[in-house]
Image 1: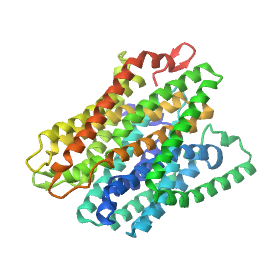
Image 2 (image 1 turned 90 degrees about the vertical axis):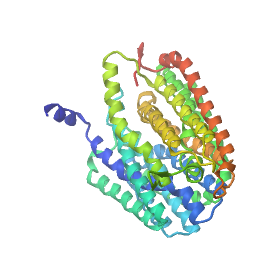
Image 3 (image 1 turned 60 degrees about the horizontal axis):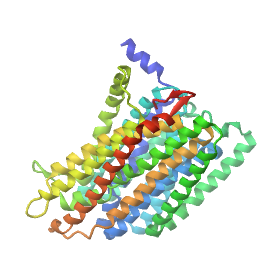
Length: 491
């Protein structure tokens, strides 16, 4: 009993509150992430190509705007203020989408994406700021926080599947509205302990802060109509996001090359290599609400033991594994490291890429053993999601924790935002792969199975190949990642 009390007392102030805030902050995103393509195609009669293009931009803005979120929070508004402001926009967005028209969907997505795009970086930065750079508890904290996020996903996916079977989308989006509002309430209750630590904004005078705060609010307000405009041009917007991603990648590479501190420059170099590898991972992962979901709806036999499995519930395989596996993996890794096992960031990244590649290569096996009507047995997509979830545990929370280890103080927000932007770019790539799928013909899944077989095989083997390359580069990456002169970082 005393050990439990000691562990609770050792948790930095604010870290526990962020765990619960994360749960409710995730609900709205979970609902839209798992339902947007189905809502657009089944309720609003969008084509598969148009729906997946919008979903790709949804992911791109949600993750890509994190780059600006880190900058706005650290220099203009503060992480705490921007997080709450973003949640207010998410609440407005979900309520607007519940109206049930295509026009309101575009405006609702614009409000929601501006909010979620700007505030997620804030939550991650608030958490990482509660640990000193050399504090190895950071990894465990992010694994626990990641478990909290996936508890939010589990609740959101479960509700989405229930209302999907009823085709009651309006009630679903109202549910998301209420969930996001609760995150605002929890943030208000814990306002004091969520204050910013170690940001450049803290050096500003009260007068400078007021002006910066006003500028930040104007930027947020201006982003909403801009995002709405670009959502109407989803394919062109996706191409633009990819171009911007390349430019920012080149800029960060240049900053790495000219950075004066040699140790920090090496850490930044390792960050760039790992970010490129994770781009492949997230391209596969972001197939879940697009191509994989359409595959589950039209080409998988979802009747299990006499019950119909809603497509959103399939994604709960992922949520459950993360919720249970996150804390267990944190404990397991601590014990293995205490026994001398070298489980570090490069090894985890390479293992994650190989594992998610195998998860996609499982699906062509299922297609080859499909029934006479072309439907694939549910067990194959179950196995795929299980393997994807294990791969995610290895790379995603570690990626967030890695920023606090590798990012110099002045680049912390930008590098966290770039990490998120890379995930948004992966969403665009996923939408392009999903857009290759022909329109489903009811009762004839065998017509689209060959296309799915090709897409899953290309993605699977590509990821395995990149994972093997990272395995080869492990010794190089270990030399680059250091805590100090002559010290190799565990990360």
